[in-house]
Each structure stands twice: as structure tokens, then as C-alpha cells.
Image 1 (cartoon, rainbow, N blue to C red):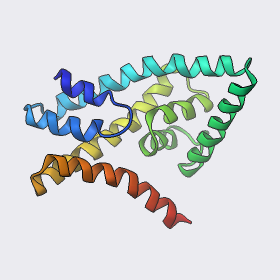
Image 2 (image 1 turned 60 degrees about the vertical axis):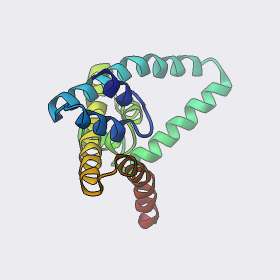
Image 3 (image 1 turned 90 degrees about the horizontal axis):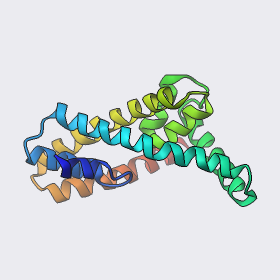
Length: 171
């Protein structure tokens, strides 16, 4: 179980597809797999929150960092606008975490006035939805083609290409 958990701790990339396939190979069912992923999100919350708050605090005093924080805020606001904006309520904030990542979801929830617990609850809800979709797609694709490496590669490619295609179609 530890190896599956460690794969789920990877914040970007193939953690979900590889972790889901490893969990299936080791006989770990959906409830335990979901719990492992949830715990990885809780660990992420406790690791990321001090970084978020520290950057905000230091950004008030260091002009170059303040510009970086401001640029991140603007990028987050642009991304949040695609999902209804940071002030649109919990469903829009969950969709931000689902569509972008839990850290951006937490940042948008923070901008909307949510504290640590409610902000991370929103971000984790969106990320758990993303996990279930991606894990199910990976397992189904692997069952169809029978090659775990190809399944992970295909899912990673789709993770990159589908959002870019959607963005292009919107324009």
C-alpha cells in the first residue's frame, strides 16, 4: 500500500494512472485506493498551506516576489474565470480543483474567503472527482489494451491534449 500511496503523492504527472494500476495489481479495491488518494490530498494540504501563506506574507515585503505572487493571482483568476470565477460558490470552486489542480482550487477558495478547512475540503472534493475519473479511465483502458505502460502513456497524453483541445475549440 505504501508504494501506491507514494505514487499518489506525486503532484503532477503519472501518479494517478500508475498508482491505480499498481493498486489493481496488488488487489487494492476502490475504497482503499480512494482512501489512500484522499490521505495523499490531506498530506498535500498540510504541506502546501504554509507555503501558500508564506509566499503571501513574504510577497508583501519583497517587491520581486510580490510581482510573482501578483502574476500567480492573475493567472489563477484567469483560470478560475473558465469555471465560473472564484466568487461563484463551492460548485465552481470544486470545478476549478477538478479542472486545474487542488493547489489552484485552494488558492481560488482562499481568494473567495474560505479558510483552511473549508478551502481544502472544496479543493479535495474536486481532486477526488478528478482521481475517480482518471483512475477509472486508466483501469478501463488497461483492460481494453492489456498493456499497463501503454495505458499510462495514453492517459498522460490525453491529460495534456484534451484540455489544450478544449481550449482551442473554445476560441
